[in-house]
Structures are given as C-alpha cells and as structure tokens.
Image (cartoon, rainbow, N blue to C red):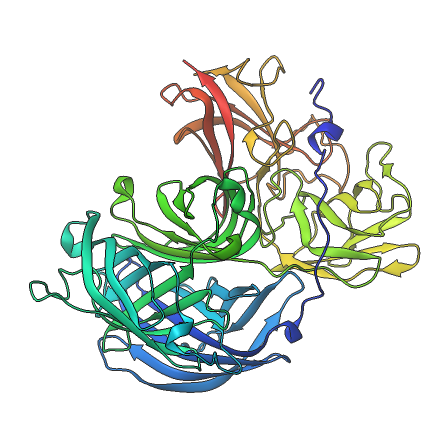
Length: 615
C-alpha cells in the first residue's frame, strides 16, 4: 500500500464527551403523540391503515400507558387505551411496545430533549412513524395566545387509508396569538393531481388551543374546491409542546390517516453552519407501491453535509443504510437536502424533511430530526455511549457493527499513555487495556486516554454487541449496539468518513482530482465491515495471500449509479483488519472530481464517499 500505512487510514478525529447517563429514568411524564401505521402486503399495497392520537405517559421505570383514539381504515375513531413496556439504552435509543399491534412488535425510537421519534423496523409489512412531544405540565396560562410567530409545517396524508390519493404539503404558518393563521400559502402534490408540485392558498385558516397542549387547526375548504382537489383542508387535532417549539397532529375524522408536523422557525439568520450535532431521526415515504419507513440518526458539522445512519424497512426487508447528503439552508431556515425540502427549527435543534421535489415527483415523504439527548457515563472512566463508530465512515450512533470491523471507541480514562500495537497479530491486551465484545476479547491496535481502535472479533454472534473496557482493575459501563452480518465503511483520505475514498490505481497511486481514474481502469478500494471471510482469518492476524481470504456472497458497487465489475472481494493480503475490493470503473459512467461511490452488501448500503473519474 506504499504510503497508505494502516496508521494513516486509522487517523481519527477527537470527540466531545459530555452529557448524562441515560436509562429508563430519562423518559418520564406525559407526551402527546401521533402514530401513523400502514400494514402492507408483498406487492406494496396498503391492506390496513391505523392511526393513534392521544397521550403516552412514561413512569421512569420502563412502563407506559396510552390514552387516546384510534382510526382504523375508513372507520370513525374509537377509544384506544392500555399499557406497555419501554427500555431506554445508554445511547439514547429506546424501544417501546407497538401499542397498535398485538404481536409483540416494538417501535425503535430516539430520545431528544424536545421530542421523540421512531418507527417499527423489525416487523415485516409494517411501515410507521411515531412522533411525540412533552405535554405542558402546569398549563401555559395564556392558551391560544401561546402560539405565535412563524412555523414551518409539513403533512403526509393517506385519505381513506389508501395510497390512491396520497398527498403531501409544505407551508409556513404564522399564528397571530388570537387564533388566526391568516391566508396560508401551500405547496404540495397529490397522486390524484398528476403528482405535480402545485401552489394553492387556503384562506382564513384558524386555530384554538387549550392549556393541556391540545387544540384544533382548521383549513377551510374553498367553495370552488373539493377535499381531493384542495391539497390541505379540514380540521386537524393538534398538540403543541410545552415550550411551543413543536406542533404535531392530524385528522380526527373517519379515514383521516395523516401526519402534521410543524416547528417554530429558526430565530436569527440561518446558514449551513446552523445545522450541527447529532440528531435522532425517523421518516415515512410512499412511492407507487413502494412504501418505506426508517429510524436512526444523523450527524451534521455545519459544512453542508448531513451523514445519516438508518435502519430502513422496505418491501425486500430491512436494510442498514449509511450515507452522506448535501444540504443547503437559506437565511430564514428553509432549504433543501439533496432533492427534498428542509426546514430548520428553533436554534437548529430540529428539522423537517419533505419529499416535495420537481425531480422526484412520485415520492411522498416526511421526516423529522430532533437533536439527540447527549449521553455519557458518570465518573472518570467510561465509554461514551454515542462514541463507538466505524473507523472508516464514522457513521453516527445506531449504525450496526459487524464481525471483523475496525472500530473506534471514544470515552475517558482508558489508559495512562498512548500505545500502538507493535505488529501482528494485534494483542487482546494493550497498554493494560482490554475490550470485551459480548465477553470476547477484541484485538487492539491503538489505546490512549480517550480513544481505542480495535477489531470486532469474528466469532461474535447475536442481534446485539455489548462493549466493555477494562483497565487497571476497573470495568467501564457497557454499551450495546446492533450487530449485523455486514456494516461497510470505506476509508477516506483525509480520514473524515465522507469525501474522496481511499482508492488506489493499479500502480498503487492514490486516485484524486489530480490523479483521476479513467473509465475502464482497475482500482483498489480499502474498507472495513464486510463480515466473515473464507477461509477464516484469526482475530487480529495478517490476512493471508495464499490462499486469499474471500468475502462470501454477492456484493454490488455503484460508481455514479452504474454497476462496477468486481474482480476481487476479500481481506487485504498482508494487512490486519482491512478488506479490499478490486474493481473496474464502468465504461459508461459519469465523470468528474466527485463521482458517487456506493457499496451494497445485501443487508447494508454505504454511500458516503466519492471518486475522481475522467473519460
């Protein structure tokens, strides 16, 4: 690999360590909620639509009650009450019983200080979106007048519980504190309106609120319109958060399966730098007979790139996705993320994504991100629960890990000195430090006071991986992450997770804008997270060259969206813990300095790096 020594590929950024220890006690009190759930058959058609609106009350000990109403299909609402269980992890993710099902399904959520969002990801045929906001605890005193200012709002609707007339809208709301929204300028599209983005004005919209956080928003139907020709009409049951930063809700009439989400607009002058930090996210979408929902996280550093880690439910099953998306934000907080619309909320603490796009007119989508509650453990020796990341991609918390993957673990008090492994095989103890993954010692490459670089042992199995660090007779907190067959991450130069991939030409020179690959060239790609290999390689040992250790199964690589021919997929011979792909740049693909480079391993999709290509 010439100058691309392993130590260069694993140069990692530091991470801020702050926050609190999270657990069931971190989720306590009453939340107002809306949960839209579609049950779909193998062909993608909706067979059953259900919507809950009401309250979720958490006791801080793993139990919750729900009290509200449920819409089923085209029927009028009926009461829905009961109880369930929830579990908050140290990462800020938590699971709770899917209270609209009876089969034990769970909703995987992320906990933010102002809202919680999630979706059901492990149950086939279920596509859903849950959003909840803290209810006022003592009332706001001045009810209707509490809602004032400018809000960005989005809706996603399935009238009658079918996709035949699916519709989505985006619009600013300007409540005046006396119950009026005024005339609302709506941008949106509907399947029965040719899937084209159009503009309409809803005259004399109004609202009324009560001190318990509930209320109504009314969008009058024009005398010249019908409920299907007007993009936004009728009454919405709404809930506002205790701080009035969010308004959520939807219809409470027969067949009114929809989501309404509004966030108070960014205060001050916004720009790309206004979107920063870690967010928990969820979303729901519908293309023609192609439903989808997801939950996960996203990380932004204020430079116009949003890096997402999502577990996506699609017709083919569950897919773990990591990707980088370009975003732009204008002075008022509105903007775009790739082809979708983006609205940034108060102080940049949340954002709404809407699928309205001229270039993707069949996509109906709504998404929400809430800044994650920061998490760490108490004391001076701990793993940051949000600080275990793929050493190549730095995919944000929630991304699964896989056997053989190179990881970086951030925390505090790990070691008294910085130590790097002297050679292969990597030791199970380095500088007096040991990492246990499901009680199996991990090979260690690098240890310091605040960071460890290690390999996930190949023999680790199960749905989750638990990480514990021991050092000097002390044992850290345990952090649990999803475990998957693969979790690809392509190394970059410089090491950042996004940007130019660590891709070499056949002469071992680095592909770059100054030294681009040509169409038809063979290139070498270095990555981690491709899982088990055949023949097996001992944990921490050099990969053999005879015989080569190969990654089984089918991989797919796309350069500029075009499939690339894979010539080799396996461990990089003579190196430790690195995978290598040799492939041919497509002869008919796009050219440029930043051509997208993606890998599909079947259960994971990674799309964060690029490559320079010339004709």
